[in-house]
Image (tube, rainbow, N blue to C red; front, side):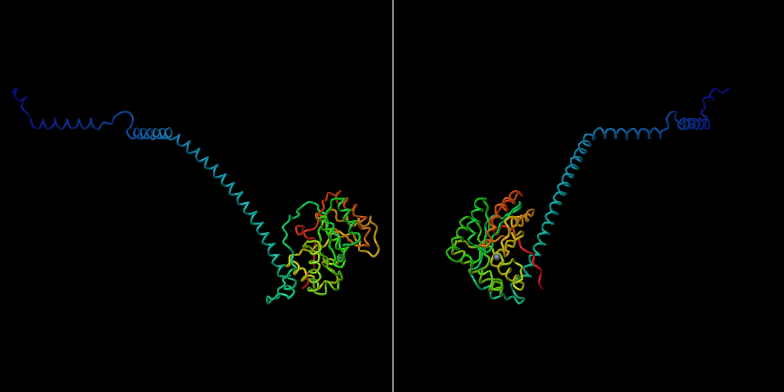
Length: 358
Ligand SMILES: [Zn+2]
């Protein structure tokens, strides 16, 4: 036996052994690991990480979130408040707009009236009478306007007369101021002048009612009307020191005699600053025979219920029963809650509506 043979290196055997060893290593390396598969493990780990980050985010940012929520809520409240304020501002503007629209409509009406009663002819020329009587203009009125409440204004036309003193006594006793629309022909002469001064001294209003009270003369033309009234205007001033501002048409602003001229008269007298008053209650005392005081009072009291009553009565020698009726008239209105006022430009004019003549 060759013992050394066993120690001899056979190249083939070595190669065979090396290959077997490689196979074994390969087999070891490719054997799958036991336990959790790798992809699932990664997925779980990633999910856990995401959840962890979210939790950290929530914990960390929760305070900010609450604060932002409170801020947002406050912002909402503020916006609501601003919206309410804007809404009320809008309502206010809308109110102002409707008021302005009403004013505009009124202004348009006034313009229409001015155009309708304009003194100027279409070519712009004005009537000659506008240049007459340069001193016949009403003084400016600076008193207080009478607004609201029940007010009764007693007026006495055609005076002064022998009854004026009695009328003044009753008014004085009752603490009532009234208005006297005087006629020139009745107030000329010593007695007439003294009665005029007594009226003015007692604080009543003296107003104009023409010089002649003759319809055909007064309403013959605009010039005729101006002539009578400017004469009376100057006369009242000379006797009493008072410039009258008010006038009343003989027969009222609309009557059977002035149809052709009254609109022009109103326009011209208004231009000169004068205010006219008709009436809305009447003593009905311009009758051929005097009426009983009781009936006169009853007629005068028919104005009860109106906000502003202008009572027409007459101050003339034949109207004694009118004076007799005065205490009952005054008491009747006082019992109905009225106060009395003399007329002045601050009292809303009571005038008859006049038809439009084209
Ligand atoms: Zn009269």
